[in-house]
Image (cartoon, rainbow, N blue to C red; front, side, top):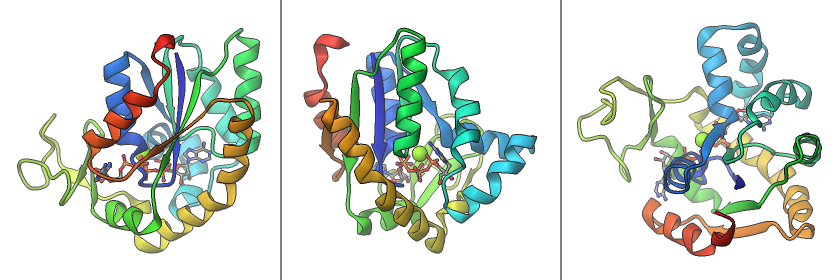
Length: 213
Ligand code: AP5
Ligand code: MG
């Protein structure tokens, strides 16, 4: 089973990818997390991607491709945040084809811009294990401390209001081509991303083509 989880910034990709991954036994591959780890370690790659991420822009396709290919060897995975434009979608198709593989489903989490601003401006992330929280919808049991590993929580650099707006613009600009691409292939699955995380997950489970799991 090979799944792509697509949606605007804050649509809940990270939250749902963890739930889908655990439930269906799929490895979660988040390019945003991979890049943030490189930035944290201050590697060459981290230094190259930081400026793009801080501005809310996409990292250039050649850098993305250099990184992602190494992660596509598993039989069962869910991609969180890749591909994000038509170029990346075509490159992914080519890479999988070379490995004799194909994608099963492209899930699009639909959400409005107001909800996104509300979710992202109150998101907190664990410094240790990367778990996601929301100050009101999914607060940690103890203020500013991760329920899972006990480390401190922080606010992502790109969760400032002006960067959130830029990320939304970038998303709107690139998304339609991608949706058309996967719709033509009969792989597009639209899911309403509003409501609490369990409700969204329930909708995904009901719609996923279970015979392929
Ligand atoms: P990335 O880290 O992927 O960021 P993003 O796409 O902007 O999405 P987010 O991670 O912000 O949101 P999410 O959809 O995962 O939502 P979450 O579950 O956290 O990418 C960051 C950057 O890396 C990009 O801007 C780009 O620069 C670069 N990059 C990455 N991939 C790239 C690519 N392919 N090509 C080029 N560049 C790339 O939820 C958000 C908040 O809402 C949380 O607080 C959560 O607790 C809460 N929440 C989630 N679900 C619900 C719910 N149902 N109800 C209430 N609250 C909820
Ligand atoms: Mg995410």
